[in-house]
Amino acid sequence: MKGFLYFGRLEKEKWFDAILGMIRMFLYRWELPFSLFVFGAGSYEEELKELAGKSKNIHFFGWKTLPEIQRYVDNCEYCLMPSTFLETFWLTALTAISRWLPVVWYKKWWLVPFIENDLNLENYEWLCTDEKLFNCVTKLLEESTKKRKPIVDIKNYSKENRIIRFLPLIWKHKKILLASDFINKVWWIETYIHDVKDVLESHWYEVKIWWRRLPKWFFGKIKKIFGIWWGAFNFIDAFRLRIFCKKRKPDVIWYNSTLRRLWWMSIWVWKFCAKERWMMYHDLWYFFPFPKKLLYTKQIKKPLTLFSFLSMVNSIHPTVFFFVAGKYLSLSLLKRRLSKIDKHLVPSNFLINILHESHNISKKKIFCLEHFLQK
Picture 1 (cartoon, rainbow, N blue to C red):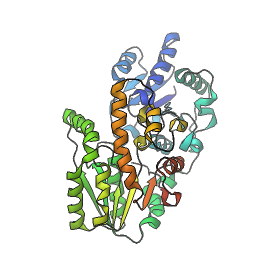
Picture 2 (picture 1 turned 180 degrees about the vertical axis):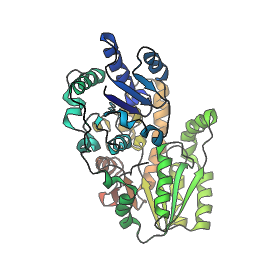
Picture 3 (picture 1 turned 60 degrees about the horizontal axis):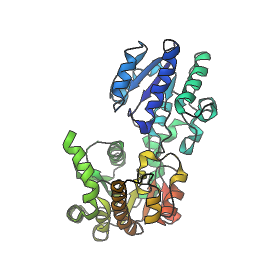
Picture 4 (picture 1 turned 180 degrees about the horizontal axis):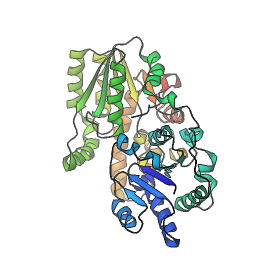
């Protein structure tokens, strides 16, 4: 029996509901004709457990680390990733392919060289993703069981190979300060900067990470929500950063996230305390009011103005417009400071034009620095 793997958040923006719909289509006719191994957490957990009660071939493990997931890879032939949600970099897909699991997904954006044609959901009939997924999986079940080789050279995305591309940007600097909204590993952004720190320190760079810790559970959610509003005028932490930098005297301040707490005032302090300022654009919040609803790059209206930002809101609710207007105010203050940044780093090539046209950043200042595989 063939095995399929899914790991990630069990949420609509990841189109996990399409996987649930595909399962129901199979169960309506017969027992699930394949094994499904699901790792993750989210709002669809209860629905998944309900379906698991109807089929012995659904195995739900909750949220696990990559080494724990790795133990089940040998039981799988494919990885299901049916999301049409636009992301800055598809690290999950790259992680699956590195484990010799070809990915069933839409072949677009950064993923074009990574998805095989017979696994491209765009090639299957019907409009709904769950129906496309059903047709694709049905076809795969008819094939003889085989392990496919990765269609890209995964070695190019190792940490050591990433540092080779990174060194030309940083060769004349030795002291690096990584600034982020939060210091603990609450999202993959924070996990990424800790990995960057480890890699750079292994090459004799002096690296510090600066910011506060995000509390757990309820208090953490409150801090994230109100941090967006507080960040627009967060002069307290901006001066904390200035004091920290005057003491440490870094060569580079590398901002990896500014959207939940840091915002524009943290960038304003650069002129007092560092030789260069870098910005990494992990998040599409910089370009679109609701990234979880972003499916196509053409939805992003450029250049970024109040009119274009509000036109991207698919709602007439006054509260939504009030929130988006406040978000634009913060972004406009940030935009004024972005021209002072020395290097703008994006994790995928398709973001270069978006950044250039949205914020009027010279392409000479924009560098693509793709993420590396997490072990």
